[in-house]
Length: 242
Image (cartoon, rainbow, N blue to C red; front, side):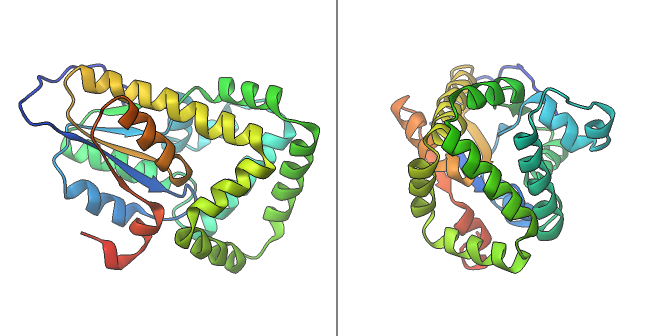
C-alpha cells in the first residue's frame, strides 16, 4: 500500500497548490477525505507517517511481531488509548491514512511519508518533558482509558468549533509536547514538501492531524508555496463537503 518514492515529475506552467487536510487519527474520515481528494487535480499524496508507522497501519500484526521494549510505559499507554478510541469512533487509529493511501493506489499516485521517524521524535520528547508534564500526560492517558466514548465525541464537537482554544491549552499545559510534537515536526514536514515541490510536483494533497494544519500551512507559506487548508471540522461537517 505504501510507497516512499523519489520519482520526479516534469513541472508545468500550472502554478499548482498544496492541499492540507486536517484529520483526527481516531475518527473515521475516510469518506470525506476521499471526496476532497477526488475534487482536485493531484500528482502525489503525502502522509503524516514514517515508514515504521506506515508498516504497522498496513499490517497491524507487525505491532505484536516486533515488540518495542525501548518505548517507555507512558508512550505505550498513549498508544493503547489511541487504538481504543480508534476502534470505538471509526475504522481504527490511522483509518484516514489508509483511506488516502488506498485512493493513491487506485489513481496510481506516488505516496510520500513525510513525518520524522517515531523513535527520534520520542527520544526528543522524553528528553524535553518536565516532571509536571510527565505527570499530566500519565494522568490524561489513564483517564482516557476509562472515559465514556460519548464524552470524547462531545469534546470532538467542541474542538471542531474552536480548535485554536485546544491548541492554546496544549501550549500552556504541555509546552514541550507542543514544541516537539507539533512545531518541530511542522517545520520538518514543510521542508520535505518543499523538496517535492522543487522536484516538480505541483499538485500535492497532505493528510495530517488537525493540530498540524495551521502551523504547517504557515511554514509552507514562509517558503512561498501556495496552500489551501481544510480543517477537521470542515471535513467532519457534511454541509461543507464538495
